[in-house]
Amino acid sequence: MAITDQERQALIDLANEARKRAYAPYSNYQVGAALRTKSGRIFTGVNVENAAYPHTMCAERVAIFKAVSEGETEFEVIAVATNNGGSPCGGCRQVMAEFGLDTIVLIADGDGHLKKEMTLSELLPEAFTPKHLL
Ligand code: THU
Image (cartoon, rainbow, N blue to C red; front, side, top):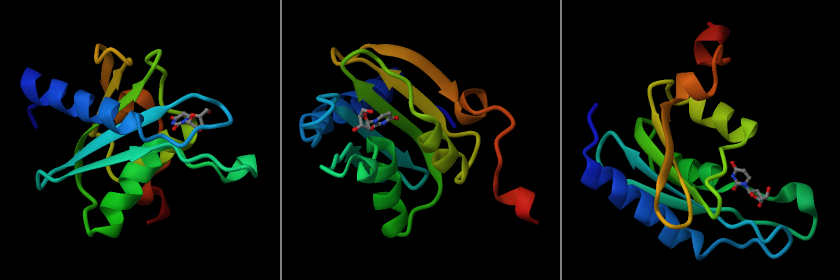
């Protein structure tokens, strides 16, 4: 899988665009994600918080669940954008790992700058995956 600089930036920009739609009145920490499937479709996601705090859902998982609910389970790359270039949480790493350890993760800040790029296997070493249940 290869991703060009242009594609990388386009996905980061989509994640930041989505970020504006984050529903984060409690933390005020807006997160946006843009996921590209192997088939070339793109799904965005934002964090959706709740007055009952634990029911909050992260942006990455919203994007992934949107994709899976549309029949897409093979992912190439996911961009995650926050104001300060924050890293995906452990729960989101685990959910991403379910669908492949080769997925590329782009971590960007609110200005659209790429802060880090790595594969899921780098982001979540020794991941527990579906193959462990075989
Ligand atoms: N959040 C995400 O959307 N993704 C992450 O990977 C880390 C955390 C959200 C959850 C909550 O709405 C806010 O950021 C602060 O934790």
